[in-house]
Image (cartoon, rainbow, N blue to C red; front, side, top):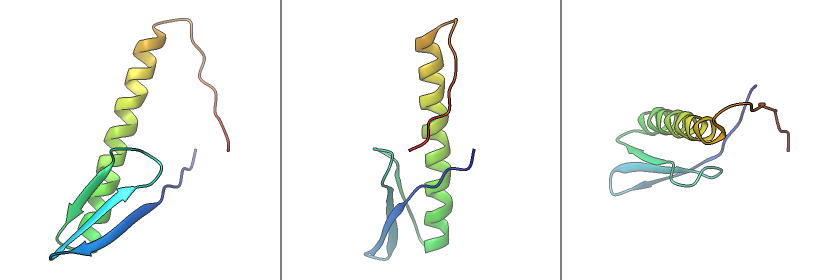
Length: 70
């Protein structure tokens, strides 16, 4: 599944800082715009994997996974 996310970014006091619009709490910074993009992708990947692990643990067993499209 190909997913797209939106980064809100700005330069502030010599740093690039950013947030992922669609996932609360996913934010990062970098000395360059490209470093910020890499850091945001890493933070997003970690957050999605953590959320997935928590959902599977909460379901325990006898669950199904189903794709959702907006």
